[in-house]
Image 1 (cartoon, one colour):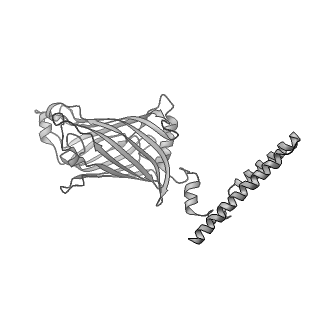
Image 2 (cartoon, helix red, strand yellow):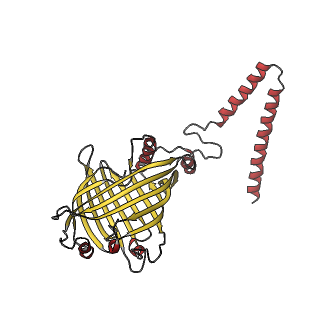
Image 3 (spheres, one colour):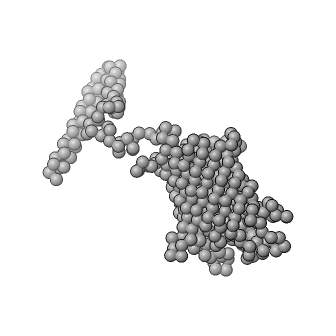
Length: 345
């Protein structure tokens, strides 16, 4: 304790001496009568202050031995997204730059077309209510359109942006006689993001955010499905790998208006998605669980690979609950093949 007090006293004494010396120097300059000479004195004082403030060159230890400290490197050195291969951070920076172009709407989630998907667990009951005269096929098409744009840039200061987004997913009985759309899910949302460079355990937290999402299938009666959520998210990156963590809270509805009161029992309260990019290939996994004794969840696996400059081959596998709103309480086992127009990273 005495040693700590002595060190503190010495530090404050040194700081006081430095301030006193600085005051003496300023007083010396102020006492010079000649204007030109007084200005030269102030210029020399400013130059010496700038020189003293410059960080030591590489390999030279700063006073206190902190120049090579990992903490100093983490908190002082600027973040170079390209050098560290933080691909999600680079994408967010590019999206923000493009947001001022009135002709540009940026991708949100993945945009894809799977002309062929196979599901070995069909929800025939709901299909019969929708199309009582046609049998449901095991093979169908699936596609997703997802877009976003900045509504208000730097709304709460630099690096904070308010976004609006829209995502639509369709399950299409393309090979059925009448080729009807079996299910369509609509997801408008608004969310606020903050760019960040907090680092720990080798990962960089490049963005955090919060927002509101509505999701419904546009049906009526017994086939109607919808819910509203407030959501929070954080993205962590490390060398061509990203981890996105989301949590949500479902906004309560009156019992008379709630089409699916047990939604949380199947969809849970959040999910975790991991993406890894290797050369021109992208591998993804998304996990969701209800964290209940009656355990229900889902896993989605993705792989994209190059075809040409515009499109990538895309394979998607889903197993579990909640692939679509109409099937939120049905366990599906589906694999699909097609193309992706936009990658995540």
